[in-house]
Length: 461
Image (cartoon, rainbow, N blue to C red; front, top):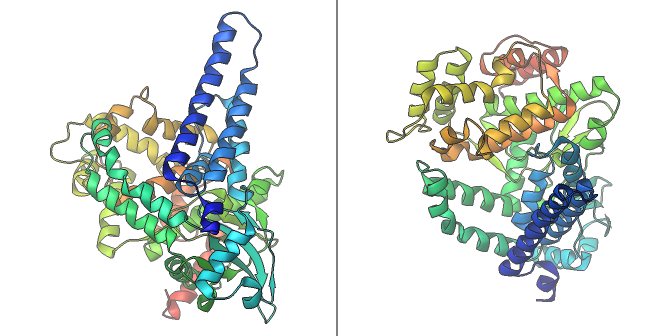
């Protein structure tokens, strides 16, 4: 009981604190603007600084679903003035790499409940200072008896119950969702959300997903997936190989243009190659999940949010993208109906919808090379969230099939991640390597091509 008290507060208390912070944030900026209109000297930027810091503090302490929202906000390109966007990103970025840690005794109690032993009895060494504090678990360094370095992710006490409690009330928002998006099929989307969240709360399931990626990317020349120590994993404990590397933020702000471009291409290849080759994708693209090794490889960590598509579903998914790539408007609309983006009852401006999908897929269909920018990421995000956008009314009338829930998240996230790198390449040619079995488009593509041919020849492709 004591461990749980040191864990998470009640759902109502968490929600109330977040709501109060939101009200203070909005009113603080608004008051600054009013004082400015009255001719008083104000510093609106200072108000944004205070708001960002307060929001990061509250979300970090709340853990669970609220902190996951904060992590998402920390890298998507928010629709706020350019001169304050970085203020929010920098404050919320701490939620990815250095969020407020939980009392280590509470973490060790969870470990003991799952193992029947304390960490120092299981590992040769156990570092009580956390490496990272994430949304639903805390990560500690340890070593095995053979000297191998590992990372141990332990779930916060009570977080599963708190998140599931919040999720069990999701139906409360269904009437509002139907007003905002009248053609949305709500129940399948809620079912998909529950399934993905339950996956993320089950560390043994996460270990299975991580092992699936590790097996598929074994010996890859520039993509690294840490292996899992399966016999040490439990429902609330995940143990995997430790990878040393630079954080994404360090790379994104470095002067090494060549490295930034290399990392951008690797991230793009990992995302699209995983879907096209294995029908698997990791649905959590935030930068805290990337480590860049000294030899220029990128390690992808955290497999709590993974989706695997059936072969039939993947073929259906390709219909929309293929039609847009062919500039086939009528084929696109037919594919939208077949995939149930467009339901029979939906009254949609088809021309505006066609324009929006061409914006959404611009990195692939535009003249190449294409450069991802933060402005492009913000433009796409605004179409989905800003009522002033010319596309907002069209998107409200679409149905989001449940299988696309995480795909949309990773697409928007990748725009922001690659925009921070100013990643520039012939993305259409790289994409074609995976979806059309085209030849290598870049030196990294040549390395990947050799690896993939060898993997297929061995019967493991």
